[in-house]
Image (cartoon, rainbow, N blue to C red):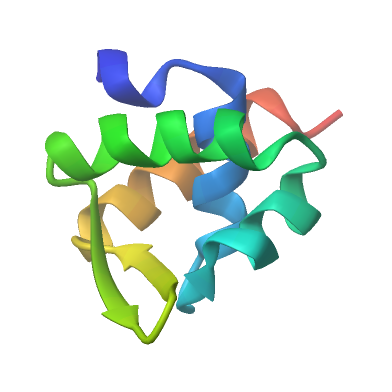
Length: 82
């Protein structure tokens, strides 16, 4: 849970949702630097929240477990609904 507790990590998970995105796509989606996004992606990958694949010089990320998406959706419904 601690690995999911950072607001930027939650933004990344919401952006990924049910799709695979490159690091640059995630940078554009969450609005921060590539370095910052990469640090958070590494944390989530090390905790097996995300999985990745390399294609040429790009790395693509996706959520590794659908239960994580369920947890993100539940968190979003609790804290982001007026």
